[in-house]
Length: 177
Image (cartoon, rainbow, N blue to C red; front, top):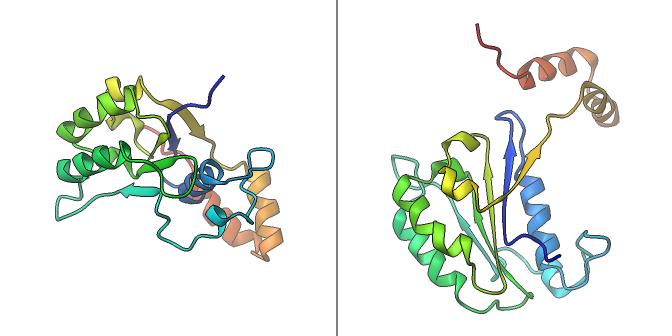
């Protein structure tokens, strides 16, 4: 089976998922991935930012929304040939900053993307995305790190137990009262 052409990484608000998204992008653009991981050696892996085959859509202006004009420009780019890598990647981050008009503009191209274009959406509020858009995405839920993983990472980084307890409290899912 061919890999999905549109992904959505959904994560808890306190989980910083940008590095995971960036790693997925690197894997998609790598000329010689090893076991799904970027090789780190090919021209695409070593290309300095900005990579010509990556287009990022993010919030702009006082409203902090992803604007329809930026989405229209991204759609035009989606139909162009990749410069270096075998594909072009369009990142929408955070995807919950898409307004309804911008989301609707993306629907058709995400449903039937041009060959060689992959969309990656990232959000901590998947419920704000249009259901019609979500239905076209391969949803990947990014788990909150377990206390054991947090403890091991803290130990590896030389972080003390009190600071770890504080970070654990900050990452806890909010509970309804």
